[in-house]
Image 1 (cartoon, one colour):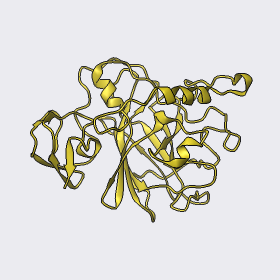
Image 2 (image 1 turned 90 degrees about the horizontal axis):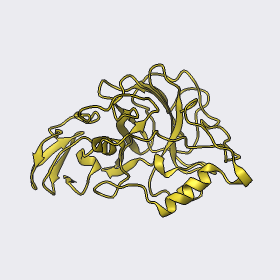
Image 3 (image 1 turned 30 degrees about the horizontal axis):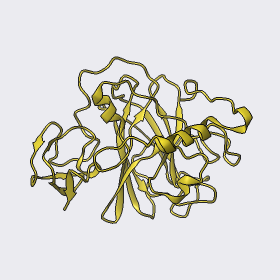
Length: 272
C-alpha cells in the first residue's frame, strides 16, 4: 500500500522483486484443493494473521517505472461491468484486513487493455470503480485483456479502505507464457482462473495493511453469485446445487466453507 508498503533499494542492481521471484522458484505458491493458488480466506480460517497484498512493481522495470503504469486515469465511472468485445471474464473475491476481518466499503478502481491489447486513454472503456459490500465482497464483469509488447496479461487495480492509503497493484493469469519473462509479474498476485463455457471465472482476495481484531468467524457469505449452494452445509457425493447461474454435482463429500464455491474447487464440484 502506498505509504505502508515500502520499496527496498537495489544493491548491486539486484532488486527485491528479483530476489523474491527466485525464492518462489524453490517455494511454490500454496495451493487449494484442485491445484489453484490459495486464497486469503483459507488462511483467515486458520487464525493466522494475513500478509498484505504486495506491490506488483518495485521499480526494476525500465519501461513502466511506476507502480500504476502509464495508463491510469482518475475519475473512472462507478460500475461493476466493463462492457466490450472479447472473452467474458468475471473476477470476484473479498478484501480483508491484516487480522482476517472482511472490509466493507473498500474502493476498488479497475483498468485494463481491451481485447487487442490497447488502453483507451480518451474515454473510460474498460475502466470503472466499485465498493465492497457489507461482507467485504466484490465482483467485476469484464473481458480477458489482450497482450501488448513487453507485458504478460494483467488487470490493474487500486484498492483503498476508508481513511487508509491506496494499494496500487496488478492481477495476473496463471499459465501465461509471458509470466516467466515479465519483470513486473509477481506470483503472489495470481488469480484463480477457470474456463466456464465460452468465458472465464477468476477469484482473488486482497489483503490491505489495515490492523484490526481477529474475527470470531470467517465470512459466511460467498462473493456475489446466487444459487442454492451455501456455506456450512455438509454435501454428499452426487448432491446437486446451482451457483452463479450454473449447475454443479458434488464429487466428494465435504462441509462447505467460504472460498470453496463450486467454480473454485473442481476437485469437489463438477459443472454440468
